[in-house]
Image 1 (tube, rainbow, N blue to C red):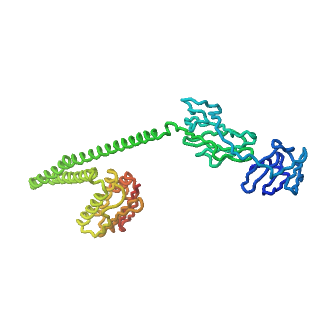
Image 2: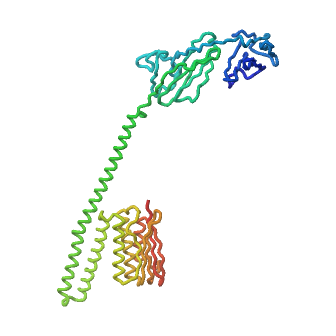
Image 3: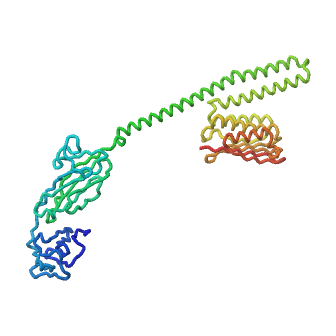
Length: 439
């Protein structure tokens, strides 16, 4: 039946002089044309005596007639006398249904004209269950007319409807479609042109182009507003940092410089009259003022937006190491590049990174008693690695863990989000490895 036969039970098969195969079944006699695989069914409505036939009850006569024996007698077929219906049947759309209810034409409905005169149907997105009714206008044997239909944009192949005269579709996506239907008469001759009608299912407003454009505009506006807020906030922070750096430089740093200058003036003017105790306190004040001024300069440098790049930090690191180590006459190797591809550090990270570096270099020049130092900064993957090594007297990390300098370094590395490794022992020098990941 899948191939068009009316029944799965076959009793006999005979070939006529034109090469057609005649098959007796439980629902009549079928003529099969092997060339185009077309099939025509003959039954009692065409003059046969039987609808059911017997096994092995068949014979082909010498004049080409075909004999088939059935329950009601013997049927004789004369293939050369069968002319068939040579006129393809006209096809018409006869009805349209929404949710299985007939739709009448009207100015506010999906049908503006009767279905047989309409060329298009407009449906809302929620009117997605609809049916078409159709008919072949051939009344020779209307019960033998056959139909096939196709909805372009949805169906991939024609759907064989047999003698059913309705096609139903459900839950189609919004879009444009064309419904086509064709029919065959009682002789199996198809009207390939058939009938057709355009079907448009309107999308809901949230799927329409103008709504999407509005949403994109709103999203774009929000993104731009967020960007502007972030930019304004960044500019405000930058202005604040610049102002603080300027104020620290102009006021506090200048005052500390004045204190140092006045101390030197007092020391030079009253050196012979001043007691040793007073001279000691004066020296302490001078050292504290100079140390405070140095720390203020570090803070000013850290918050100055002009120093946010790695380039400025690397220049400062090379200069500081050279100045400090050259002042001690120490031999050293310095492998710090002029620029790296890592993203800039935040202000707090940059300040901690600099103070860690400065503390380690200062310890080498003041306490290590080293002859040689090696300093390198490398980038591998998404990690920055700073290595500082000397051949000095070293120290015991367990005994030195309570010293402020070492505690400060560890605290700053933690605040910076980095990691470290320190290898040191008395008489074997010291090596710091400090890492910082990004990205």
